[in-house]
Image: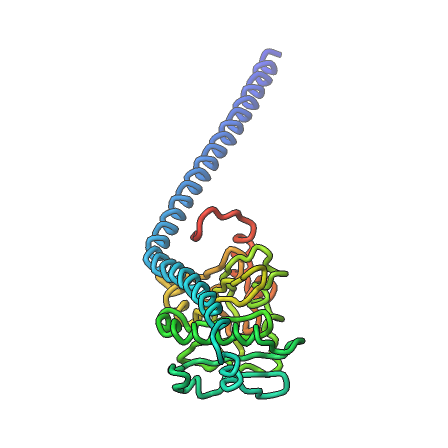
Length: 329
């Protein structure tokens, strides 16, 4: 009898001991897992911060250099717009200006008027020398009236005077107008002579974004990356709307070619890294992994038109955040 009691006490002790060991083991394993997780997260976050710091340090000179370029372009657009308004007032009081338009411009197809090719090759006329200029006045619903001609001539004179000063910073300098007209100074491309005769520039997102109906606040903007089918080049554009007494006269604009951006902004500083630059709307500006098949005629590369997974993720990140600085890595 006594022996059975001893056996039962021994069994209870063994059960208690086993339960205690199980609890100790569970606690020990839990502590190890928690400690390991904390160590992993701490190590991972520290490593991640080190990588980000290194990338920021690598990119800092490039970002500073390009931010300076972008700031300079925006400042030059203000100069271009002011000079246009000054020249516009001058041509309105100058005799014989309308006759100049009739002499310098020609109808190349029904409803389409272009600046004569000599103004791109180089020509001396009216006591001035013109070169590297082209103009396209495309299909429109109304006739070209005298006021419109004055604006076109004012833009032509300003481009001839100021365009050469900025040719090393930008691909071209140009004025676009809401009446489906564009005048350009470019040493590389006579865009106005190359533009398709049926092209309506205000139908597409670049110039369309400057119209009063689309941009009531009259805010200057950088476009996303787009393919200029007439010039056969990837580019981004800075545009500053020019209004006078409530009328949208023109846009002071510069194109920056993709090549110069890719060579600098997206140069890989580390192996297995990809560099993608977006504007605050999530539109693509430049990328080291740009797929050539992504070319969409006359369209900016946005989350709707460029189906690349990494870009899609970054575009969503940009548009879902409220950025408080001009640039962010």
